[in-house]
Image (cartoon, rainbow, N blue to C red; front, side):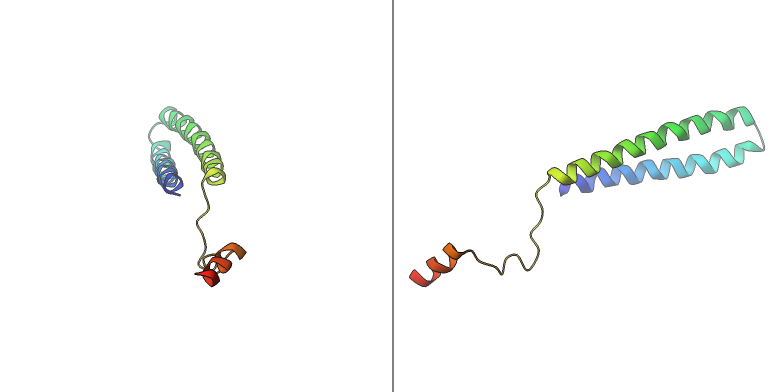
Amino acid sequence: MKTTIRLREILNSTRNQIVALQDIKIEMLAINSAISEDIQKQIDSLENVYKHQLNLINSVQETEPKSRGWFSGQVKSKEDRLNAILD
C-alpha cells in the first residue's frame, strides 16, 4: 500500500510536468514554432513515461497485500470459535 501511494505521487508529478509544458508550448507558439515543436517532443516523451508509470502502479497493486476491510475482522474461523469456547 505504501509503495503504491509513493508511485501515485510520482505519477501526479509527471502529470503536472505535462500540463506545465503544454501551457509553455501554447505561449511559445506565438513566439517561436521550432521551440514549440521541441516542447511537444518532450511532452510526448513524458506521456509515454506516464503510461509506463500507470502500468507499474497497476502491477504493484496486484502484488501488494490487500488491506482488510472493517467487516473481515468480524468473521472468525471455525478454529478460532472453537478455541474461544474451550478457553
